[in-house]
Amino acid sequence: MQRKVGALFVLLSVLGISNVFAENDGDPRDPWEGFNRGVFAFNDTADEYLVQPIARGYRKITPAIVDQGIANFFNNIGEIKNMGNDLLQGKASDVLVDGGRFIINTTVGVVGFFDVASYIGLKRESEDFGQTLAVWGVGSGPYLVLPFLGPSSVRDGFGTGVDSYVSVTGAIDPEYARYAMSGLDLLQTRASLLGTEALMSGDKYTFLKDAYLQRREYLINDGQLKDDFGDEDFESFDF
Picture (cartoon, helix red, strand yellow):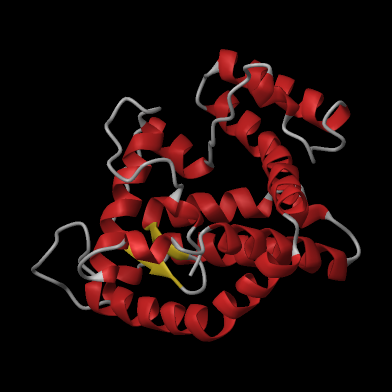
């Protein structure tokens, strides 16, 4: 599934999709606002009536230590992606930190269930191919809301496709196990964001767009810019 999703993102990013969307004279970052708002409305409805109830049920029956362990497990798998992108960005020291985190958490941390590396001072940083493209000088392109996956941009959508295509989870066999792993990852991420709606103000679409774009700039610049939206990674707000 992840490989198919990855291929879809790559295809969307390289096609001349600008001809499909109506121009918008408002926010220059969001020339396809009409299309994006339509996808956003679909995602928001699916989230309200399907995803949120499932996420609340998951949160209710899952002990906090297990929930955190699941988050740690998937973060540990993500260290491989972080290492690859750090290498492509020429961040040798970060490659060593990510590699150290992966080894420590996979062994002492029981396949990543416990984030032992953070306790000894090895801080986790999130890297992806969208950030790598930005470091290489590729512009973000227009803001883009993806079905089911939420806020993105043309560059970051392409990057997500590449990351998904080469991910460790995407290589899991049999196929049903791969789907189950991907579903659990998304469910845990959504459950962790329950309650964040109360922090939003004004137009929800505009708020999430500004939060996403500002957060991406913060990540691309390795925290050198002020991030008014705190530590939540809005790129993980999938619906």
